[in-house]
Length: 82
Image (cartoon, rainbow, N blue to C red; front, side):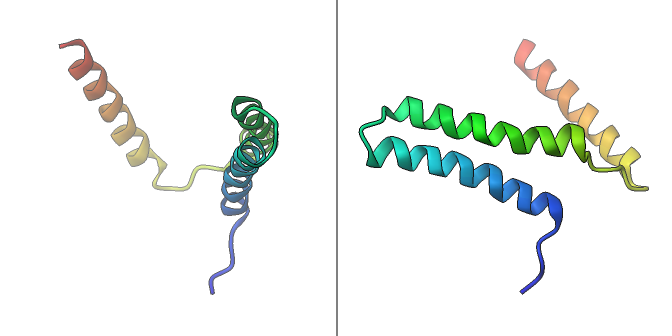
């Protein structure tokens, strides 16, 4: 079994936080929306860590990914407008 990298663990923590909030909303007397909101607040801590405390550093192939992303955004906006 391959070992998980740091950002893989963060993604699992985010999904787990949301799933835990959903489970609390379904299995207890807490409203579903409140459970999901609590899970989202908890998941925000992991998102903050991934974006601001330990952001991923670009690799050498980042230029191509940036170009593809911007082309995708321009095409998406153009199709939404037209």
